[in-house]
Length: 412
Ligand code: PLP
Image (cartoon, rainbow, N blue to C red; front, side, top):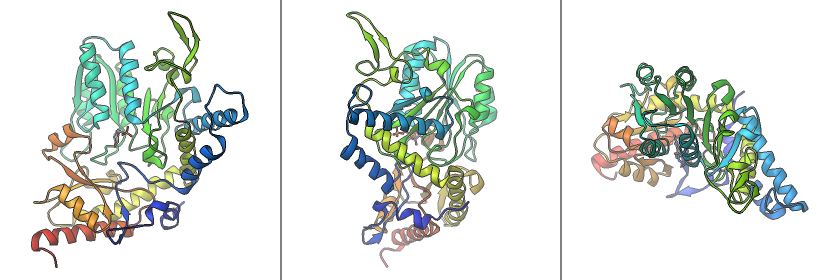
């Protein structure tokens, strides 16, 4: 099945605007994606018609809100093929999800001398919680290398994942190198050595089918706002076998069964982890985003985005003085394309592109260890989604060429 991006983008009201007198080309989707009208409508409809607190009310609005919120959890379950919706915890996003694992699983199961294996290409959200855990427990943080051509070094992974490994935590897709990591193989390696596998799915879940049972990972984390949903809502998938044995990270209302004066008992999964009034509107709107993505088809989205990369990457690589980080072969590069222009600071490049209406990001992309590893202080980054078109790729290339021209020869 193919995808009509030009038609779909009309369902995203924000994309229909001029920026600096030019039609907006939004290529900062790895940071956050835009929201279709269906998601905006779901948010408004909840507040206009159903707004009530979940789980604790018996009146009609409370029942409607609870039904919609728990219905969204079931949509997430289906979307990632979790065994049961009790394994789907709503969080604020990937960062919170990873922190919860590090705190809750880490406190329960990690001991002095254990090893936590991550890679040089991780986002800060998949580094710092493990640094903190390692410091708390006198465990050791171990980094898997990245190869010169931008892949996770599987040979090095085989050397570093061993009997001391308690946790392996790796991004499914790198938010800088755009590479898809072999997370199924890593999961197998982790399990063979008695460890668990945590997957940071922030850059994969929005762009490709994800099946947590097929991957056999123990935990999978992702954010709603990177997949057409609102900010402030995300997911932590965890196998029941672990979640049952883990303590909540936060305590308070909603997550308790009985509260005595000096101790309390927790609700069953998933609610024992969800203290306080949750982001009800966010959960419901994430459900609407999942409906929207599912109607297009995640495999269709993946294939369409690959076709954009097939088109854009060779054009970018052909620009004299432009370096693309990560694999140079489009077959191994997703729609996250980090680049630098020789002699120009990426912030200047991003500012110049913005003058042409092209929105890209510049900076360290919350991956300072990777940029140090690559020996670059910062990069520009264009990141595509299914509502981008080949014309958007052309506008990017033209704007980069105009930027080069401007900085070499001044305004024409
Ligand atoms: N992990 C990766 C690979 C990311 O790209 C991001 C966000 O850019 C995160 C984690 C953190 O996501 P959030 O800020 O939504 O918690």
